[in-house]
Image (cartoon, rainbow, N blue to C red; front, side, top):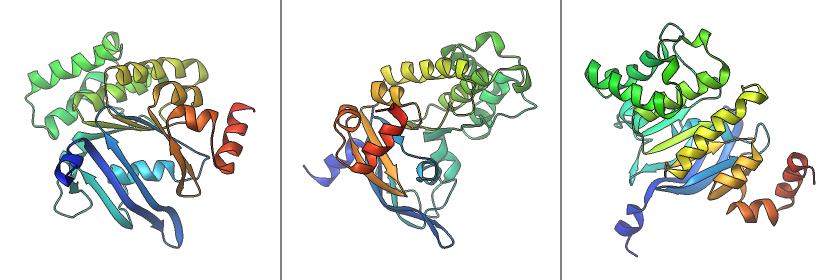
Length: 252
């Protein structure tokens, strides 16, 4: 296979990525690729570098070294249009990051108008479509303070989807939710996976990772310790660190 052909089925390639905050090295030599339709779940203990990895991919943090190739172009270079890149590689945060003074509808419209330069009518129609997709049509006029945590996260997902990204990054999207609200957000994500949305998901929801991902990455102390299909990682892990982590989470 030629380089050109091999690149064509890859949306994103992470090559030798590293990140340090002063003398604290958080990521070391991270390598993996994302193909169209992949659902990659990143698991690992708190402090293993999972969220920093997503923040580097979304350029919320500047990598200390390595490359992030989006359709073969290194987006860590200065001439990249970062807002346009983030429209294509969207992110859903654990703390929702909604604008408190805006309704659910306007939260979903603002990026369409400011970044994609859509007119108000088009932005409103698109926002309505994606709010309906995540089951939030009845709440288009509600502001975040009037919504539950699960509802806020579904608005945040609709806002990211409205930009029609090629990849969606989820940074522990259920960790700030009460247990009874986790299911409604995971159900939306499950539906997106079935529809072929390309996703990288940092999660502590092991059952979700096992059932929805086609590839699981286990991170430990800033490196990829082990990766592979869910059955391999969850049923027959090779590394002792993976076994110990899963024993704590799965009680085995």
